[in-house]
Structure formats: C-alpha cells, structure tokens
Image (cartoon, rainbow, N blue to C red; front, top):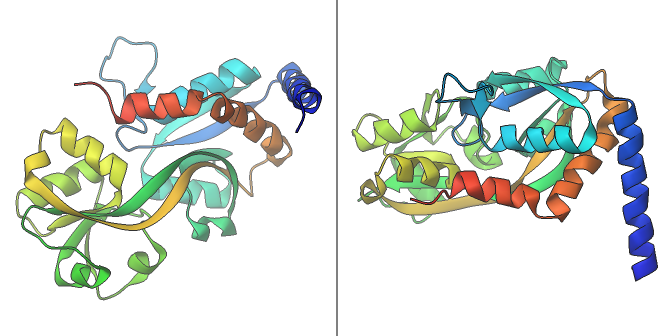
Length: 250
C-alpha cells in the first residue's frame, strides 16, 4: 500500500472512531479472574477495584473510543457461560476453536503458548508422558483440543493457577500444571518457586483475542470495538501492556 493509500486508510479509521464516540455505548465485559489478567486491586483505597492486563486494555479502549465498560471479575468457567447466553457483550481471552459456537473471534493482541509445566524431577518430553501423571488446571480452562477431552489424562481441576501450582509443589495430587505457559511462569516467578519446576511441554499456540458473544444485544457495534483494539495492536500499546504485567521488573 502506498503512502497516500496508507494515510487515507488511517483517516478513514479515525473518522469511523469519531463517529463511534459520538454515539457512546456501554458494554458489559467479563474479566477473567486470573493473575495477571485481572484481579482485585491490592490497594483497597484505590479508585479502580480491579487491576491487570485486561483492565488496562479496557481503560485504553475507553479512552480511545469514548465508550464505557461495565467490568465484572469472573471465574473462567463462568465467562464461557456468560458469552454463550449473552450475559456479557464480550471478553478478552485466549481463543479456542470450541468457542466459535457462541462467540466471534475479534482482534488478536499477542500469541500465547499453552501446555504443561512439570514439577522438578517429573519427565514430560511427549504427550504420552502426560498419561503417567496427574495434571492440575483451572476448572473450565481450554488448554488444547486433544488434552481437554482425553480420558486417559488424569486432571486435578481447581479454582485457579495459583492453587494448581501450590498443590504441585506440595506433592498433593497433581505433579504438573496445564494452561497458559506465560501465566504459569508469571505466577511461579511471583511465588519464587522457579527451583521447584522443570520440564515444559508446549501443546499449542493461540492468541489473546476479543471474544464477542453472538447473543450480545450490541452485535452491531462489534466491528467498531475491534477497530479500536486494532489501533492498540498496531501502535504497540497492547503488547506493552501485556509485557508490563506479565514480565514485571524484579
């Protein structure tokens, strides 16, 4: 695309965003209750009740668009249900193909590796190795299409990653943790438990995306929502937000 065409496309997008802001909307958004994606603000005196990657993405979305969001901190399994029945308009989460039955895949922010990280001394060099151990994972989480439904893999389903990691270290049930490897690594680092974990097995790579409920009453604004988030991807803002939370300086 030439310089003139690029400038025209940019202006067209700006005009579209201005038109959207002139008709400000309010969107119901579920926040996935996983650290560092979204969690209660540790400062009880702060104006913002929640903090995290998704919270910052939505704050920037509101600033750029003029729209507002009603944000609800929600356990993962409940987010899936809310998207399916239309109790929220959209969420921001790792995309899984099974979700296409009830949500539209929107703007992609960053790639995410999903797989399994084992306790030190537990060998997981292949998928078959997973069948020899118990694997902890947050309840309702989509890890990998094969892994999710495989009856030969014993799973210890818990509330969140932190509990799964603590149980694996304490030698209680699970000997490994499944899910987003960057999230697992973030929490292990935060808990200062790096020395307790070893092998990593990547099962698939997906993307953090907008998931827009097909039963949302605001489907007509879906393209506008994705266009605003796309500007955040194109100028690097989305990646900077992700990295600031996921890989904070010590």
